[in-house]
Amino acid sequence: MKQSKTLPKRLSKKLKEEIKRRYNYVCYVCGIKFPSRKLTIHRIQAKRYNLPIDKNYLIPLCRGCHRKVEKDIRILEESLNLILRREKAEKAVYVSHGHNVP
Image (cartoon, helix red, strand yellow):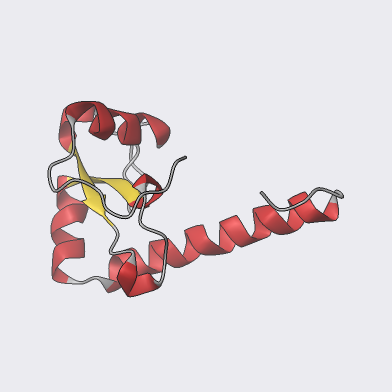
């Protein structure tokens, strides 16, 4: 995906639907599948975690989890740590098979 310096303040319906579809309409935190209209899109604060600013850090959350995350960011940080560990492991497997890291 193309990386950008910023994302628009208001996300388009098309982009929101793309994010939900990418995660198979599953809430990033609780792991439950919801109808599209029951999911919201949350922006992970890229600068806070020293991440690139792009749409890879937009995640679907059900309304209940979104409220919890807004109150206590540690809930999301635990999920984010799992994702970062998974990405690191995927790169390690990719390299171990003799490929260059993309």
